[in-house]
Length: 150
Image (cartoon, rainbow, N blue to C red; front, side, top):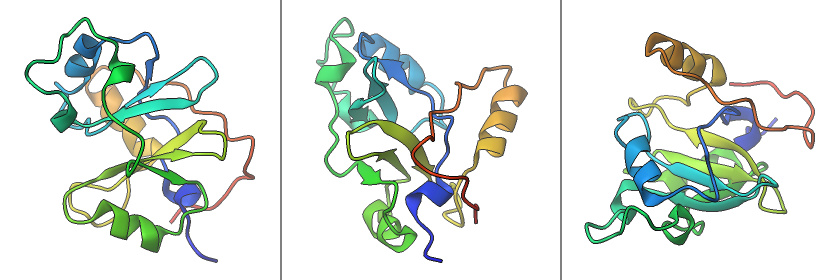
C-alpha cells in the first residue's frame, strides 16, 4: 500500500471561520506550534491558508483573514502520496492542508519538528490537554473508510 496524505493527516486541526479577522490570525500565531492558520467557510471549504510571513506589518488587524494567505502550494489532495508530500514540504515548510475535490478541508499534514514523522490526533489532543486548551471537533471523514496510520 502506498501511504497517502489521508493516512498521515491530523483530523482535528485548529481552524477559523470565514468571518475571522487578521487579529485572530495573529493571536493563533502566538502559539509556536501553529505554523499554518486555516480559514474555512460554513460548508467546510478551505478559503485560505495563512503562514506567519503572510502577516505583513502594515496589514490591518480588522481586515478579514480570508483576504490574506493563499491555497496554492499549501494544499494537497487526500490521495497525494507521502513521497510527494515530502517534496512539497521541502526543507522549511512543515504543514499542508488536505482538501477533497470540492476544496473541503479534510485535515492537516503536520511534519514533526524533528522532521522524522508526522503528528497525529492523539498527540495533538495530549499537547492541548497539557496546555489546558481545547481540541476542535474532528473534521468529517465520510469520504474515506478507516485507514491505517503509519
